[in-house]
Image (cartoon, rainbow, N blue to C red; front, side, top):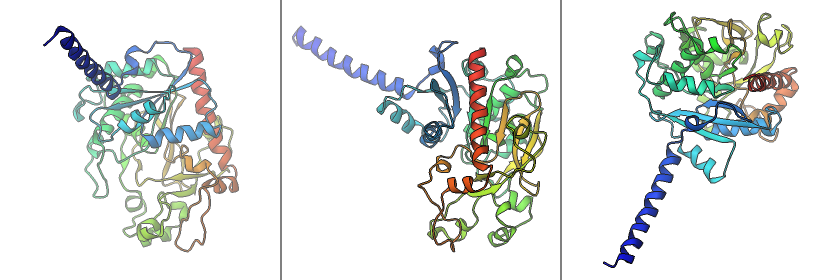
Length: 382
């Protein structure tokens, strides 16, 4: 073989190796490894960075509910999660989305080592120190063995490693009754903003040492059939029971229902609402906080007071968990309509429901404005 041919061949091999390395880098993003401690951008870290989560954030920004021009979003996930995040990485690369980054964790997590120093403790600290706030999104049920209870037959364990990751990080952030000698990260930065949505709200409770009610309709209301649940009335539905009976009807799986606000919670003391206000929200859950975790307190419930709808922390003022979904893009799109019952002749937009039941729309806007203001304040002060 001629030298020039050999060089040419080596060059081709080098090109292939280079492409492989680039693909490897894309597949294993590690934003926080090289991120500067200070940034001109407001850094919002999110867990469960699926295309759906990203789409919801884009809709919130497009509709003015996230009024932060210099926002950077960092999606954090673990390599062992069952969710395939490659679609999100590919979408961001394909569309050259500069405001969206990712950080893939690989350290080993065991269910018996979540609530103490473990293989991810140092990375948790780095993520915390280089972020201006965190959102934990919704998802599947938490394994009950993480809060030392047996598993209800209606509990579905689908993403256990995600629960390992998020409850462990929450424990590192807030501390918990599982390990009273542990010094939580927020002790060094008590104003750090954290928002837990649906599963995220439940994770805040479990991560701080609390438990969950594993099925609201059977454990709280004593119901065993869908028909009996329907007779409870819509104010006591947290998913749409009609969807189970009539799957061929293309009914929405979520439910819209009102909240009862606790007079001592931040919805009233900080966001400016009144105890007589009953904002409508959209929800999709069958579990809720049970015994409260260390520092957690209830600030909103269902109208009958039986279902926990929001939690806050009694030591860290910018920690909020909501059992409903204020992030859903469908809430802010008047063009999309939905039917809730088989007898509904036409659909209605969730936006119209919010607008037609004041102060529901204002409630959602103020919730996001509160969280965004806390992100901006943290960015300015750190």
